Length: 193
Image 1 (spheres, rainbow, N blue to C red):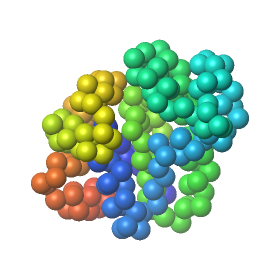
Image 2 (cartoon, one colour; image 1 turned 45 degrees about the vertical axis):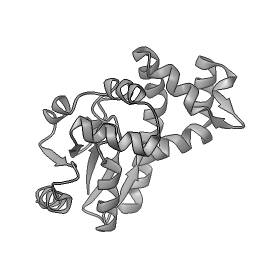
Image 3 (cartoon, rainbow, N blue to C red; image 1 turned 180 degrees about the vertical axis):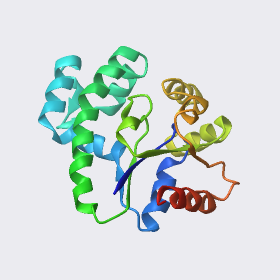
């Protein structure tokens, strides 16, 4: 079994690509979704985040995401600290999850910041989903109903697509025009060789 990282910047459509892979019969672990669940469930994450941000970081047993987002997207140090708390727990959760799919030749881990956290090194290969910035901004304006300024702040907190491209040879252009299925099938063929 090969473990494949699937990543892309905010608004790139990596989750859309992950959904296609799943429909094709590939097991996909959604790291970002699971990290949200674990942030609400895992006592170690809760304790550490309360230690850093105070009890108000949780409301009714749930992580106060808008407050956390506001704090970490303006501070690289805080963002790295939070990532260092959450990501090892998510990685362990992924490794346990893969045990159920050992009969599959490929399993995928969909995550936003595989390169920034150096997690990409834990995979047999990585796929980068990318799109032009104006396309990503348009998607996020529709999806999240946040300001363009907010979107740019989040984009600037992540590495550029060109920097990520240099770290993987598997790229999927998700610009809304280029057919996705052909690109996905070509990469799956290469990964299964």
